[in-house]
Length: 166
Image 1 (cartoon, rainbow, N blue to C red):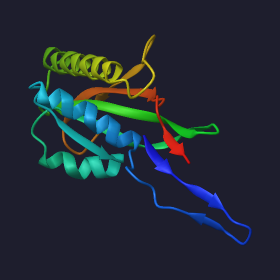
Image 2: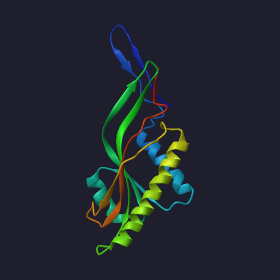
Image 3: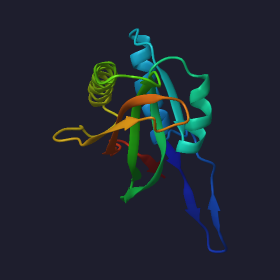
């Protein structure tokens, strides 16, 4: 948990620097790193779609893209603030331009299985509330300048521990 200390004086408000700054993105990155440590050959990108489009040209392996969240909620209590961004997470891989349905379906199924492993690791991490129930996904075909196929999920990731207020 990171700390943000705010003290009020009669004359002004003084803010102290945040210590051990831990973001939702860094927690997602840790989950992906744990998959890589288990031998899963993947790349991780944290970017908006335009940046992903540029970066994906350099990527050769399946990729988990944590898309820069556009919105979310802050849950404020007397002791901490928990972030709950509305995320988009894509699981994508390269495909041939002239793919056939069987080849493309195989990539989609591999990306679904990567998604399953990610969600399992996320739930086991204890960093976020459990992800359970129905999760809608959208199949991605040629979403970028590169020929890619995969799936995109939308999750609201709710931190278990947020930023502690002093």
